Image 1 (tube, one colour):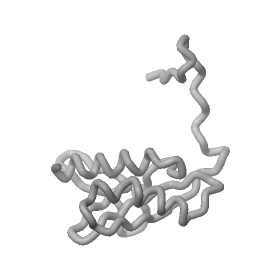
Image 2 (cartoon, rainbow, N blue to C red; image 1 turned 60 degrees about the horizontal axis):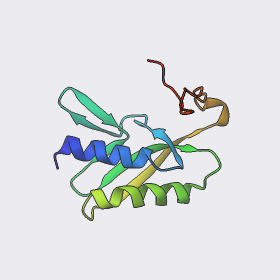
Image 3 (spheres, rainbow, N blue to C red; image 1 turned 30 degrees about the horizontal axis):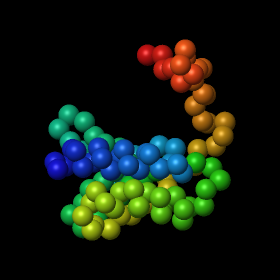
Image 4 (cartoon, rainbow, N blue to C red; image 1 turned 90 degrees about the horizontal axis):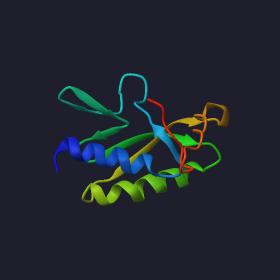
Length: 112
């Protein structure tokens, strides 16, 4: 698997965790991102000895549960490398995106 495919797979696995609202690039001097030609994958940094995933957490979930969810989701992808989870922020209820109105099939419809 290429670095780009791995970074994308890690990002998708982390965001799929119920306690994760989104990924976070972090702040300060050390951003958490994988830099690829022409783009970057925010919230995932792949190093030779570990993988760092930085997330924005859903409110009401203990941090240890968030870290466990992310580790369980990412570990199968990284062949035994340690996975460090950084909870960078908390998504408050008023910051959650509004629910999409149901479409004809009852499924939310996105408007581009």
